[in-house]
Image (spheres, rainbow, N blue to C red):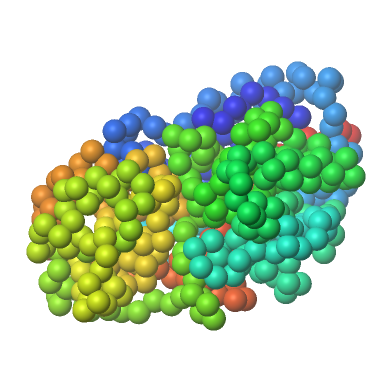
Length: 458
């Protein structure tokens, strides 16, 4: 868990519970955010009471630096109003109210549709990101727009192209601060030729950048980085912060490699969906076969990347006509067509926990079967993944067919319907549109910012 010892800013340890995004899960005794059935007691937002921390903080203010900044204080007042509005919305009786949700349905794909809808509204009114201007491309301000790491470049381009409603015109109006390091570009240009896979060069570049902006501006120091973030889908991105745990103690990392067993902290960090964007395309949904025509029970095709897939191949590779698992897909079989015809699409971890097959499954209308341990799923502070996906821990890979055949036809039809409903949140639009993938990433960052309050002296 994140260290919630008191600091010169305030955490709202119960805020996400106040948002009611997790209230349904707690009520049902199930937390969908972490794919780890071996440890059901792992509660992402199980915190000590806020009052004790606030008391300690208030007692320590005399020895800490507080901020005298009228603009920032107005921002904090606005955030306080947003918290109150979200709390009121979250208390709406879901059984009696179903109107005024706009693009968001009141279906069970959400932990609480009303709280989410209000939170998204508040975000659109108040959320502003300042991108530090220091640094030059390609190591900064530039990222890939295509292929497996594309979310890094798409987000960076969206927020820096001058058209985003979330881009702050000045740092004084910012609610969050973006460290625009191009992790993929650093690895591409600094590590060529690959003579060493040591992470020190990557770590030093990011640390030096933070040192530069923290010495030049007051924003990092007033929260110790709690309202700052960087974003990357590269496998090496989580290693950036291991070089100096104290420096990055409160820093927000938006990562595809959201592995709770390797230091990913859900109350602070943001889980990104991994999506493979083809050149010249953004990716789009298509209906595939209707559920009554999907005769194939399960399907997977992919390389032997990582231990999870090795176990999958050991038990299922070309061994069962109902659970079709291939390492190399025969030329006579079309990959997308197979996903369109399957009821369930297997999404095992590769070298890391995330897999682009989750998004591919949703695009094809195929119910994703997430085979991973300790994976913190994207947007799981809003979405109820249990309602539109199946989670199978690695140790139960031999039981895949039994588990999937145990899903009744009624349950499957409900899950498949919800897949079609939820996939709008995983579509990349440029410019970004409300409730699409980039807006959902913004909302995940917004929630982390709501969880922090900067104290002010008067």
